[in-house]
Structures are given as C-alpha cells and as structure tokens.
Length: 220
Image (cartoon, rainbow, N blue to C red; front, side, top):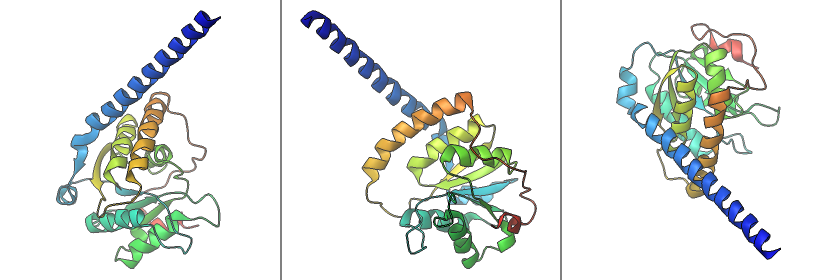
C-alpha cells in the first residue's frame, strides 16, 4: 500500500512539474514572439493605413471614473490618435457596470470627435476584444493600447487572427498589485495560447460595423 501511494505521489509530482514547465515555456514564447511589435508613441504616430486604435478595457470605479490603469490607457490612445478611429473595447454586460461609455466620454472630453470613437460593448476579455476587432469591426491593421504586461497576449491573439497589430504601452505610472497581475497573466497567456489554436467564437458577435463610418452607431 505504501509503495502504491509513493508511486501515485511521484506521478502527481511529475505531472505538476510538466505542467509548470509547459506553462513557463508558453509564457516565454508568447512574450518573445511579440516583443518586437511593441513600439513607441512616435512610431505609432508614423504608422500608415491603420484601421483603428483599440483600447482594451479595465476597471471603472464605483463613482464612474476610470481606474488609474484605464485612464493611462485612454490618455495614451488620445495622444497617438491623430485622425484615426478609436475603438473602446470593454465590459458593458450590465446597466450597472459600463466600461465603454466611460472610455468614450474620456476620449471626447479630451478632444477626439465623437464620430471617431467606436464602442465594443462585448469586449468581456482580451480574446473576445481581439476576435471582435477582426470579425465585427473588420480591422486588418491596428494599434493596441494597454499596459505592457498585457500587450504580449493581446498581440499574440491578434497575430493568430491575421491582424497586423502593433502595441503601445500605457505604463505611465507604477501600479499597486502588479506582482499578482503578472502571475495571473501567465495563466491567461496559456489559456489564450490554446484559444488561438481552436479559435472558439465569443459569446456575442453581431452585425459588421464599418470603422470608416460614424462611431455613434455603436451608442447604446
């Protein structure tokens, strides 16, 4: 009995070690394969034929103001917008919690014409946001704005979807709790690595929306 138990423990430990090594290898691959497509704000401004700049959603405070991380994403996007459309992709799953209108209002308040700001109300996760960027908004070339730790995964998903994507880091400040985010991100990179192989559809898709049109069609 003791011998069998010992064998089971050894097998379980071996499986755990294998899973850990696999997770770290996938994490390293996702980062190394996308790091060269993280560019500066000046390089982003010089890019041509960009269909849109997509801002990935983040926490909105109970008082309706963007969290520090989200505000930095929005400020970065506004600074590189030029005359290109902005796509605000985030969680608007309930009436009580609405990231995308908060994001849109920030951009408009900071000088972006309302007709150039589109909203994706069903960007519930990074994978959904990028999938919908391609399938709903028809983007072939885009700039993704979020914090650097998040950019690697977003760029990897975009590449798997056939989007020519570049990332601009929105790390304008130091954020508390970054260590726990970095750990969670390893898990998320592994999950989306598999999602990019099998490409499951998001829960919500919908009718195509033309980024050359008026962003006000996405109000709601």
